[in-house]
Length: 242
Length: 216
Image (cartoon, rainbow over all chains, first blue to last red; front, top):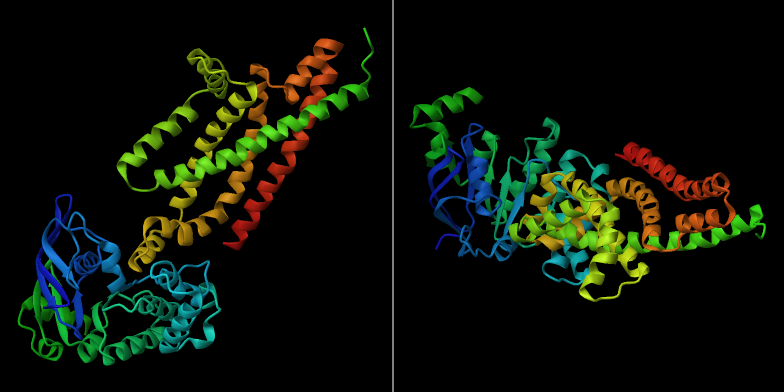
């Protein structure tokens, strides 16, 4: 069974339908890159997967847990589905290590000492061992985003959702974040990324999904899709970015 | 008629001031605790918790504090329950304070960026945990100045308790005036004492406001 299974999901804001029947299967170890214009529904889709947004019809199952049900166990779901945001959203009153330790200690009831060890491990993984006691305001954007990734990893998620995680960064800081994500992909982490980094989508992604007007317009192996886009919309989109 | 010297008047007023301070503290601490509980209900996004809380706040904000004191003092007595001025004043002021503090604090909670809620939700924290560990520690910073500022209103509000026979600063002033017939002196001293209680607080609130704005 797929790790994340999205079946004919529809969502509207009032009369505006933003998702018009989206289906997607994500297997363990997949790196799915979702691309598309702004307003195509790609971020909304991602946010539906961990229940930050609700949807009106269809079904999403993540790690076997139904997301949208009336009695959806969102807490259990979110322990296994991590998310990294465009704006980092670190907790500004806590140090890097405390940001990472918070959920393990509060949600999983991990003892402080053990949580600190987890924090040390995941912060080392994102290359920020020496910044454990720094506050977010003392870190660069790239460093903040890497702490945010570490914060998600501390919960040992089965799948990590990345919502345009490099879009708010200065160009010279993009690579340090992408390198961390690439490393995670190599280690077998299941990733679903909404991204504007086409080269990254092509080189690291195992699947590419092009969303257009609230639908999956085209999908396939990234290299093949980029080399020979089948639909005029994707051709236009790809050439538009150059 | 015995002659009340200036010092006797002042001594009596200062003695009565302790009850003003005591009542203010009760109202402020009690109101703070009730207000915090109401804050959790008010921001819970659960309709059947939010609506009654909203009505409660509207009632205490939308009616005069004096009426509330009367309700607690005379109203409750109608049900055969004997209420002392202490209990009535303490209770009414506590509930009145809680309504205002809840609204002040709700504003501070809503000033915290939505991303903080989303980030804490996506690491599986529930509402209480989000408030306790993520939202309130940040909201508290911006809440300090308006909260201290509101404490001035609480102190001045306690003066109304004199009307139900609670002997605090204002009531003592009235009694002393009745005995001495020196209203200008007595009430000037009463006002001065209120000012001495309130001014440091409002000065402190202003200072905090400036300080936190710079830190942001």
